[in-house]
Length: 295
Image 1 (cartoon, rainbow, N blue to C red):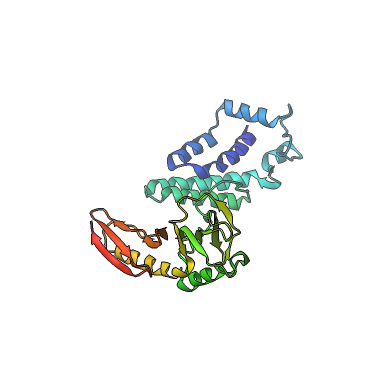
Image 2: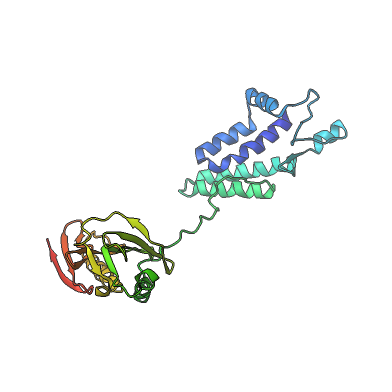
């Protein structure tokens, strides 16, 4: 019975990592005072032989009955664990846990988890997929942000290079979007059939292959690439965020875009909304501030 209690202790310890202070106390009590049903269940799961020896990955070694009482080991996940030593260190750990609980500090639960982790490490037990507070979270990749002026100009220059537009005026259809992940998306009027348009995306320094899209009012929604400058997107972005910082509760822009209609282009966002006020903001074609007024 004592052997089973020791092994059950080890199993219960592995579950301590996810417990709160109250749950840990309950686990401690159940560990040192397991009821008969739990012991019986453990016997069934581990298929104990009639003579009391363990089968499978859990095994005992003894030469005489006295030695059997004094020297006992178990093998878990390929590691040999001395059960008397485990019991001693477990008692030390539980005493530490009781002391930590008396402190009634907000950090008590974390300190208890640390103490349990230390015990598992001392006993050379694998923690498997258990989550601990010491586990470092994977670093979150920071967004690139809107491309700087020089890279915006480079993206525009590279857009002029496709052979299908050689010696032809490139007409931008509908809009151009500049995103905070460093990408740009737009549509160009087809170089052969003016009723068609293709979508392109700029990412990691290169433009994608063209993808056909449905068009609407294409005659009224095209504007020459030569009449715009991608680098102006940085001006719009900076001015907008400067103004947004002056409005209580307003969020900064994460992207800006050009909208095309009747041979004109207009920069967006066109408004700044705060918790108490809303402002209309307009830009000139070159990205400079045109107007900023409260609505």
